[in-house]
Length: 417
Image (cartoon, rainbow, N blue to C red; front, side, top):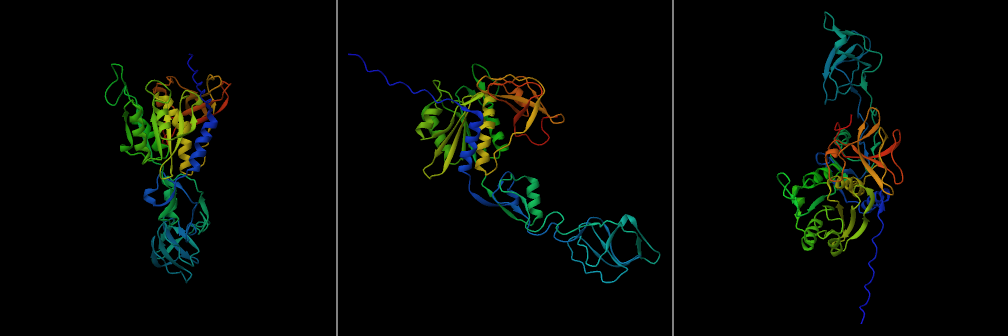
């Protein structure tokens, strides 16, 4: 008796186009945007405004002098009738020919017609102040910087030290922001060493130390205890590690195991957790086997698993392609826009795949220069890069072409020239 024919295995879905994958990651993040909380200014760096930042008073709130000198009324020379320092409220000048000494930033008294700079003043033998005030006022007018209630930054603005200082100058003590996404990292691979040089068939884990730093620069919070691994190469260990990380993190990144090899347990683990794929492989080189999955917890809250390839450069490319827009959506920020640059040298295409090529930017000339040492397993090129030039499917990059660049989240002043 013949054995029944086995059911045919369904072919895997085609990889998503790179731009489509990026858009999907942002959309699911935005749909699951994190709750709005109030935070004191000292705790705001790295958060995102959930409401527009507006002034509580005009800026400045009152007429303030911009120089040290003398606030004068009428024609000189002037008789000194007092002094006003920053933080005080002066009495008005009511008589012509009078003046008060005034410090930079102090409130200009009512009745003052001008401020005479101290370095341009002199004293008469009988103690009067003499000099000629400049024709333009030496003070800042109320509302010169902003009117009361004026919107200075829209919702979705990343909060940095400049925004914090602006909020303080407006009189705010707290702001309404999106809770910062919390991320975790699971490192897969029994072959990885966590200390010392590679050897005897084992390689050093480069992603465990690096990925948390990239995640922080993309706007998420990662604690040392949120980094786990190497996780044992068994399905049960993968499921347990994912379940534990998902209990406290909004986004769990994993490294390695995104293919279907003999010890690649990520896909079965996601199936065991009831995950739904947002993206399952992307038509991009390097980094093709990246993925993003959505998991709904027992509390009804949505979490995400981002599967990063095990090759280090491919993993960082996956962070820039999928995790960066996901985190932007979760934080309520706009979709990250890609700057453009002009290619200084040719970059080959990758056929039907998008090619993301490591480049260094010359910010003076606005040109992008491709780098060497850019294999998927290499990090030397990445260490000198500013981002990835986008070479679209079916094309190649020629000198003079204007291309989009996926920037790496470098600190100001780093890299480039």
